[in-house]
Length: 528
Image (cartoon, rainbow, N blue to C red; front, side, top):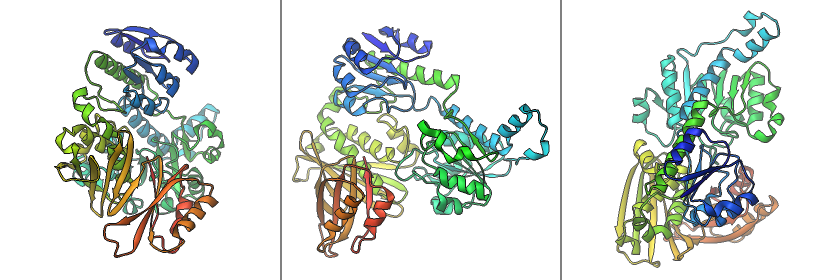
C-alpha cells in the first residue's frame, strides 16, 4: 500500500504511517499535479494548504482514507469523498489544551494590560500607574459552550479562584454542577451575571452575531469579553461601540469576522482596551504534533483493517452492518438536522422510529447518523464515531423503536426530539435508492427534498400568502428553487406550512419581513 503526504507534517506522523505502507512525502501540489498521481495511493494525509477537490477525489481510484492533520476539514470535498466511500478523518481533540490555555492567557493579558504595558516599556517609558489592572480572583467567568475546551477553561478558572456560570443547551445542570459551575439554562438569564465572558461554540445560524448591541447592553457594565472560538460570533462594530462607551471594559479577540481582510476590522482602531492575536488558539508545537500523530494513527489503523476514531463523514463500521442501510444514512442525518434547528428548547430525549423494510434490519448505523445530525447543528467536532459518546455525556436519552406498520414507503425513519419547552418530530423516506424526501414535519404531511437551504413558514391558509412571501424573497434577490405547501393531519386551525428551498441564505432581516406579513405565524431558516 502507498500513502501520499503533502504539506508539512511532523516527522513522528510519517514514521507511524511507514509502519504499514510506503510513504511519499511531497510538497504541496495544486489540483492538476495531484490528479496525475493520486490514483497510485491508498491514503492521503494533508494539512490546510492542500485543497482536496472533487476532481482529485474522482481520480483517486484506490483511495481508502483521507486524513486532515487538524480540526477543520473545509479544504476537503467531504460530499465527494462520502459518495466514493472514502473515510475522511481529522483530529478534533488535538488542540484542546492549546485553545484553552490561549483563552486563559488572553484573559490574563487583558486583565493586566500586558500588551500595552510591554509596548510602553519597550518605548523607553515607565508608566506604572497608567496600567493598573484587575484581578480575576473571586470574579465570575461566564462560559458559553461547555465542550472539551470550555471544560478545560473552567478547570483552570476554578484553580484561579474564579466563580463559574455556564450556558450550553447540550449539557445538563447536574454535569455543570459536578464540574464546579452554576448552570444557566437560558441566555436571557445569563448576560447580566458574569464579570468575564468567554465563548466556546461553533459558528452557526444561532450563534452568528450572538454578542451584539442588544446582548451587550444586557451585560454587566464593565464586562470583559474573550473570543478564541470562531469569528463572526461577535458583531465587531457592536463590540467597538461598547468599548468606546465603556459598557465593555475590554476584550481579547483571537478570531475575526473576515480574517482575510482583518485590517478592515473596527477593532484595530481601539487602543489599550483590547488584545488582538492572529488566530493563535491552536498554534503550539505540542498541538501541531498531537494532531499529526492522531491522524497518522487513524490512517495506519484503517489501512491495517481497523477503525478510525474521528471519521467526519461515514461511520467506521464493518461493511456487513453498514451496507443494508447505507442508502438511508443521508436522509437520517438530514431530518435530524432539521429537527434540531426547529427545536426551541434544551434537548432531553431523542426517539428514533423505523418502519417497514428497516424494521427487519440492524439500524445502529442510522442511530449514529441521527445523533450526528442532531448534535452537529450546535456543537463543533461531532462525527460518526464520537456522537454516541457526546450524547451520553450530555445526559441525552436515546431510544430506538421498530414498527412493522405499513406505510406509503418501503422504509421510513422518524426522529422525535423532546425538550423542556417543546417537541419536534421529522420523518424521512426514500422514493428511490438515491431520492430523499422529508415526509412529515410535526403534524404536517410533506414530500420535500432536503436541500442546503430551506425556509419554513407556517401561515393562515388564505389567498395570496405564497405570493407575499415570494415577493419578499424576490425583493431581497433570493431565488426559490422548489416549494410546497403542506397541510396538517387535523386542519381545524386552518394553518398551513410553506416549505421553500432557496439558492441562498435567508438572513435575519428577510426573515423579519416575512414574519411581519399578516397571516404568517413565524418563519424559520434551516441550513443543512
